[in-house]
Amino acid sequence: MSDARRGVAAALLFLVAAGMAGVVPGPGGTRYHTFALPEGIFALLLSYLLVLRGVWLRPADVPGWLAVVYGTVANAQLLELLFPPPGVLEWVVVAGLAVVAWGALNAGSRARTIASLGSLALLLALLKFSVIPVLWSRLGPRAGDAYGLGDVAESARRLMADYQPVSPAAHLLGFAALGFWAFGTHLLWAEPDPNTAY
Amino acid sequence: MNEPHPLAPRFGGQDPWLVGGVVLLVLLSVATVLLYRGAPQNVAEAGARTWLSVRPDDFTPRLARARQARERALVLRAQGSDSAAAAQLAVAAGYAWEARERASESAGRATATELWAGSLLDRGELLLARGSTPWWRPDDDALLSEALASVDQALATPVAPETRRRAEQLRSSLQTKLRRGPLEWVPTPR
Image 1 (cartoon, rainbow over the protein chains, first blue to last red):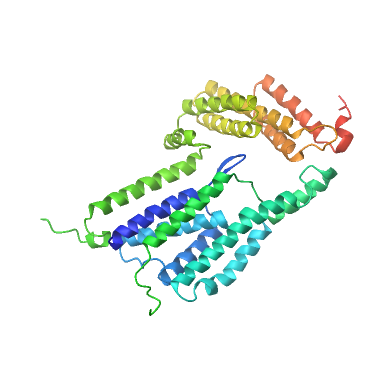
Image 2: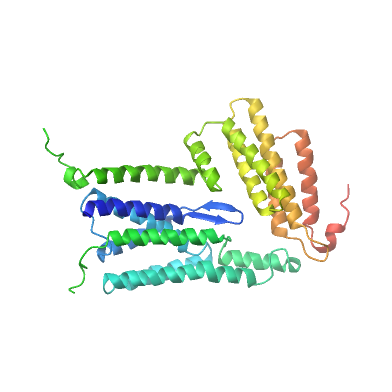
């Protein structure tokens, strides 16, 4: 397959990934999330790293640039999916990532970059889809309980993370979105690794 | 005459698969934007909602959608799916408000407003029922506050006197329910 065809195919896969990542079915109805400025900035940094490390083909023509642009949008939407809900926890996580991301992702071969990125995605998913829901349901009395104490607990929880419950379909859509992103990245994988001699 | 365009190499030559791919990419991009703009709540609604996003000035389809969503909510409530019914009523209120904003005459505007307020009050009653618990357990204040917000929203807009009376009664019930502890059983002074 030519590089141009690979670029357009990857752009299509990234578009599907971006579209799926923002659709979040929940008990109160389906929500549609679009990325905000922090996710956008982080996505730009990530795309730069992916091109720099040779994970994505360096764009040489219009299809190549299409792939990078759609890939950046997909990165931003996936970060929106994986970052914790707004609150103190999100500020801590994003600040921590901003400090360590460059060192963690820009070292070693591109295979290591992808492995680091995968571990990062796993930790973020664990935090958002496992740790926060468990803490949310067990940390203190629920709103309206305990004659006012539940409301205090609720406001403390909301300050930490403004969590909204999601249905199992949201997990499935998120997983599919990550799968499409991985397939798009596979198409843009340059041969051989431009950053290693072996 | 058959010389390639000077920009052809930058677009990958004249590969028909490439052109088809780019056209598909543009179409899918537009479809995704319309999908997000329409924010449908289920697969069946996706086509209609996306179509409404393309035709932003239509009043009648939005009113019809609002009525359908409200009827669907009644069916869901009868089946015991209170959570889904509340979501449908929120959808109905959203459609009705959009129809109200697009009404070109006062009669249409009044119809859409009544449908909007009715959906909000139905939702308020549903949440009041869901948030109220037996006397030995505390009520769900979060749901009751949400219901009160719905009712206040309906009261903030001019509606028919009958709808207003219904909203005021519901508001009074919710305020009583939201009192601390046993105070909810103290009669309200008239």
